[in-house]
Image 1 (cartoon, helix red, strand yellow):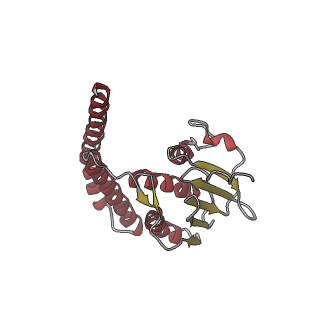
Image 2 (image 1 turned 90 degrees about the horizontal axis):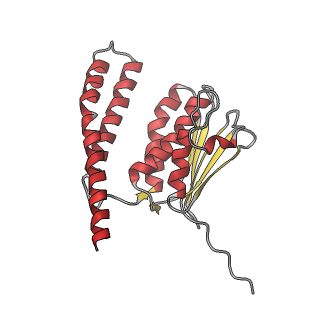
Image 3 (image 1 turned 45 degrees about the vertical axis):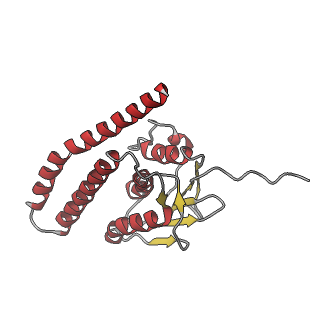
Length: 219
């Protein structure tokens, strides 16, 4: 019982620390937003202000979730995928990138907190924009079962170094930390991240958000 109480106290302290850190970000975020709004009106300015607004909403979400002892522990994979694709599609349209989504009828709940699932999907989509040329398209697919699976595929040059999954490893300007976030999210629920070659080229990231089913017993 004492150990359980100590764990509860540690978790509460961790939530308060996250909320405090997020709260401290509000002041520089506000200054950044004011600076962005003061820039001459243009498409770039509007996109910058929208990005700051999105960051501000995320900070607010982290604060509210961190202060709740019953913080959400699961998310609708289909709803998150639809929302993040819509967010990134604005930039994709500006860069002439074709976007394709294949989503089953939902909802499809996975045992991952919404903010963690958003961070993982944003890391995958952000890598497409950071490491492929303008005009390279991508696709986001959700598979319902038996293991909920997220697939992000692009038609870029692909990736040669599979060791980028190791935290801190780098190739060129990449740190590998984005893929590590995805890997840890998948492994945290008994799943895995697999990198494969696209068809006919590119990179396919397959994120299984749950353990593989047990094989049927042999007769």
